[in-house]
Structure formats: C-alpha cells, structure tokens
Image (cartoon, rainbow, N blue to C red; front, side, top):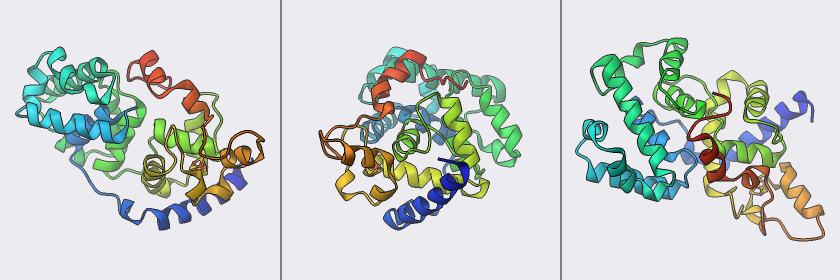
Length: 256
Ligand code: SF4
C-alpha cells in the first residue's frame, strides 16, 4: 500500500475509532513520575493484570521512595501478576535511583517546563527504557505529540496491514510518516483502546469490529478456507510472542 493510500485509510480508521471509543478523548493528563512507573508496569503486560500489579504495589509500599530502597525480590513478588516481574522490579528501582541521584527528588514535575527535545533527551538517559515508555510520558504527561509504538499499537497496525513484521524500527518509521504530527496522540489513545477492548492478542473480536472493511487480517481470514475471523489469530506480533519479545530484550527495544 502506498503512503497516500495509507494516510487516507488512517483518517478513515481514526473517525471510526473516535465514534467507537468516545471516552478515550480528550487525552487525560497524568503525573509524569506516576506515568513513567505505570508505563513500566504496563509494558508488554495484559492491561487487567498490570492494573492489579500496580494496585498491589501501591498497597504494599508506602511511597515511591520505599520502592526505591527496597530489594528487587520484594518488588518482584508484588509485581508477579504483570509477568516479567524481575525485569520490571529492576527497571523501577533503577529509574527511581537514577532520578534521585540526578535531581535529589522523586518527582518529574520539573520536566513540565522542558521543551520536547530536552524532555526526550532527559528520559532517554534512564537505563533500559523502551522508546514507547518514553513516548508515553512525553505524550500523556507533558502533552507532546508522540505515537508510542508498543506491543498493543503495533499489533493493530500490523493486522490492519499498515506495517509489516520486519522490525520495530521500520514500523516506527512507517507510522511516523503516515500519522500527521498533530494527530499522533489521538492515534495512540484510540489504537490502544482498540487493542485492549477489541483487537486483543489471542481472541480479536473480529465479528463485531468496526474496522472489518479496513483490515488486512480480517480479509485474509475471510479468504482462508480454514477458520473464521476471531478463531485463532496469526498476527506476526502474536507469533513473536508478547512475553517472548520482552524476555529476549528485557524491557528494552530493538530500537534502543
Ligand atoms: S477486524 Fe479483527 S483483526 Fe482486524 S482490527 Fe478488527 S479485531 Fe483486529
């Protein structure tokens, strides 16, 4: 599909998703440190499991400082629900330690005065953060137009046929060319809502999906003599594996 066609299709898909998920907009602004730590816990995890893990973490630890000074094993026990608990615990501790050493505080509020480049560079110096985590903080907490390409958004983009499975960096470049700068945030929250509520990893609800007529995966399933949409996804994202990718790379990215 050429770029012009992709952009046209992108706008059509956005208008359908906006009607389907009106609660996703406007984008709700979050506290930057809370967002950073929440994004680490949600990365490559099922939303409901990540929510449970975060709830438990907030219940078991008094504040982020207690998390910072606690043993990785203690945190990992609390984060088990979200999976990859050792990696997540290590990353949380390292992010909080880095911030404390650099700024002698556990807040990222000072970033609210940073221009985009400075904020992006500051976050990029946190060890081991996937670029989508950095982009989530920049978008959701600081209001910069970014499109976090994580497992969820990439899954939907692949199934729609917008990107192939070549590599994350290639997919990020493709989506960056297709999505107009001013619509990056909107595209992210709508595609994420769709990934979580309809286009799920293992059982996409294709029969009731508003994007059927725009979806390559659906068309392929219709054309296939075996199976029906929703039976068993064959997305390359699924084949690579949600936890498989994260286990190979820690919580890092092939783009980092
Ligand atoms: S038709 Fe199925 S695979 Fe395509 S976007 Fe909808 S839920 Fe996802």
